[in-house]
Image (cartoon, rainbow, N blue to C red; front, side, top):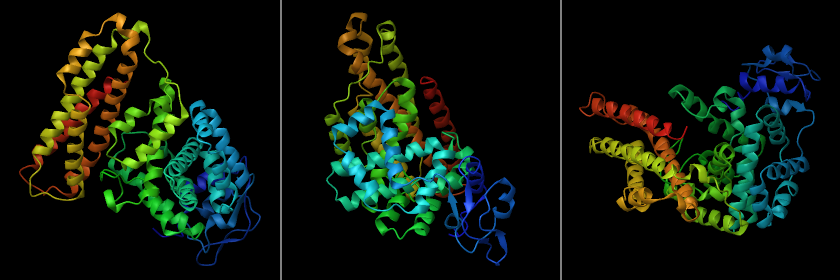
Length: 446
């Protein structure tokens, strides 16, 4: 990526939209690389000047040549964190019970946050408020996890910047992709993944951040088990800081996207941690458990007496579909030729082993669990309703794990399976079976 070509159509659109409420003005003359004046100093970056900026290579970075009215400051950014936390009673309770306020104040106040970063966060807040909230959440929780793990203040400060920067590149991606939750085409998914490279390029341009910050941005979507992207790194290949932001990012999506609809809170996050234990270092999960224990959150009762008696049968049906998915995945793995090797096939083999372990450890294939579910009676509500909720949550998280793993399959078939091999038609057909089984399993959670 040419570091000077960050002013694409999507970003220019954001700037011109922002200018309708928070005036965006050129503070210097804006020239292209041939020395042609595109926009004079003092001009508002409005829709009428859009055509002069889109697609042009410029002598200097556009963000350095403009200013945004009402731009965030160190002080106002801290207030944004506070307002965001107060929006969620469970998060502010965690924040207060872990005495994190002083650390957050120090992170926002001690060093001057680069102007261009504050400017881009301002644009994100106005144009993509949901993404801005996710950025605050991930930054806050990653720093809190780092504190719990007793990392140095310098490392926590690095994580603070990784958190603020890791998704900044999404300002330069098609907004329809940014807001899309699932069902990406291959082309859309490739385009979406470019936000990592863009975020990294922006970080290099706006401040001389150290290698730990840049590495953290680059690795925040990688996973300890090799199932992440863009490079499929795993285990010792990964640093800690980007992974902490990655875990915080995952928890953010669950808390703000899934739990808000169901009445759940961070008190319900344990099933996710249990199912995904392989995706991050065990020490990260220990830190999260410790934070939740100290927060003393109350678990909401989501199963009522009226629907209680139907829940065990529903869980059994969901469990059967998940086991069918598991068997289909095992069959897919069994048909991969022994001669095939590569990062995608390794990730699939590892994921299959991990899912096998989860199935056994969680008793998903246990006849005793099925017998227990079938034996539950209406007057057992007080004793078992919480356990049923946790069981259903674990099955839901296991289904998400399958969904994440299956994203690797198209890349494996394309990049690592020999063309015209005898296994190709079989595996392509089995991929369709996996897809159909996954869709069927998701129907139970609609």
